[in-house]
Image 1 (cartoon, helix red, strand yellow):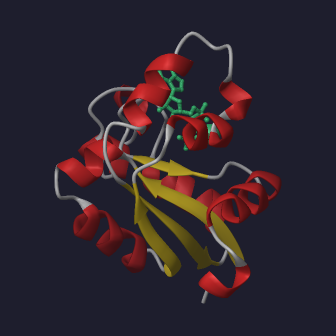
Image 2: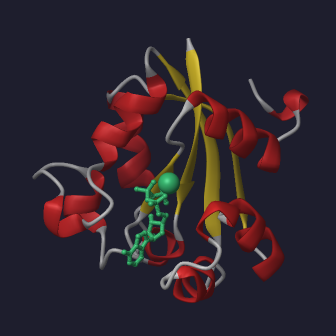
Length: 137
Ligand code: ATP
Ligand code: MG
């Protein structure tokens, strides 16, 4: 089984969508094996999104990601990385398929409700960024 890192972003938490989104994840057999709620510092958000440093949307992304608490989770399942990205839908919600998390719950490209790792390498880095092995079940 494969693991991936999920973040329910501040707009999803503000709109009380934690339960709704996690219901979809569990129904998709993306099992939650670790979870915590935290309010990211600017440094934590910048380190997490280091690959996007210097891009035009970076400042807005940091402002948004630190605007309120998030829920970070490790999801486990068959082909979890790709399948979670399918359940989330495209980064830009106007391109996301109907029925995906971003189609239903994103407010904009930046405020797109959820994050999911994009490769096994990024999943390993991102999971270790937020969790120690003994926090993952
Ligand atoms: P994430 O990494 O959050 O799961 P993603 O892998 O679909 O999303 P990335 O290209 O990694 O997309 O971008 C990271 C985040 O930066 C996006 O989720 C979005 O919040 C923001 N972002 C990306 N591209 C843009 C853009 N063109 N304009 C505004 N915000 C953007
Ligand atoms: Mg990404």
